[in-house]
Length: 100
Image (cartoon, rainbow, N blue to C red):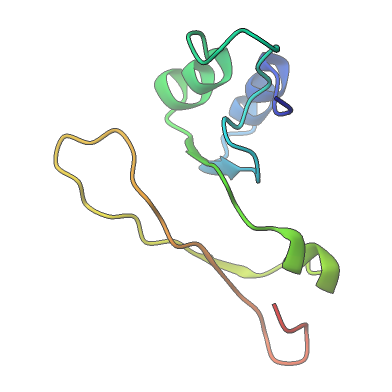
């Protein structure tokens, strides 16, 4: 599975980002046949750095419109004792900057 490497996770953590995401299932690279037993990128980002990870983002429309800057709005569900949540991410763009 394609995705971020532990080196990429450390690079992001060093820059103190708040959240990261991708349009893949597991976010990080998983060698064929390895399964999800070991997820070092999740450990570096979530556990060690407190950085949120979003998976399955639909980024094609933004890319097609050439949008590189927008207000990002996200509202996760409040799940007591949960370690994750479905979210509905929205990219709010100014009038005249695209239709995504």
